[in-house]
Image 1: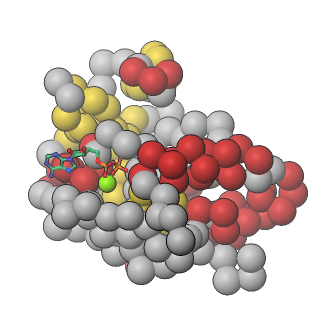
Image 2: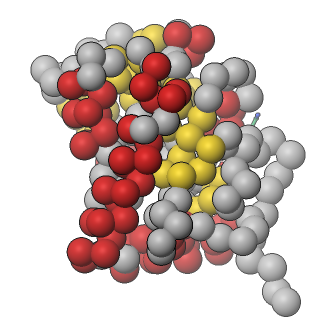
Length: 182
Ligand SMILES: Nc1ncnc2c1ncn2[C@@H]1O[C@H](COP(=O)(O)OP(=O)(O)O)[C@@H](O)[C@H]1O
Ligand SMILES: [Mg+2]
């Protein structure tokens, strides 16, 4: 069998995510978000790292709102000098388009990574055992290698795969949430 490399996987997974739409997807997203909200590491976290999702990704806005409603601080990634840092966002934050069209907060304060209690990791594909395929820049691999706290990813059914190519620098995600009924 011909092995797909990471580049092929990324193209394939972006297409799968873009073509997975409709009621079923919305329901699955809601199930996954609910699973996260029930995790002890979410409930106890004072400061959570989330992402501002792209249109084809699982919508993280309800999670950001839920965190604020629960009195948590929310931080999101920002690329500074080729390194990923996390900055705090609030309901008052205004945004500008950053590299790759991803929204970035204006005038945001950088937080120290040790003060983040939970990192919700984005990605294109995952195995149930925590292997992750990101967008190809390796930012989370470089960040997580120095991060000791819990990590979690919300994986839609089309993002769960049996195996993925991994390099020595790829970091495992501690918990992959997936919907058993899909
Ligand atoms: N710990 C690290 N130190 C230096 N470079 C790294 C590290 N982790 C990842 N990288 C770089 O990031 C690049 C992208 O990593 P890759 O795993 O392909 O992307 P992604 O994790 O986004 O899917 C790799 O080419 C690698 O050189
Ligand atoms: Mg990687």
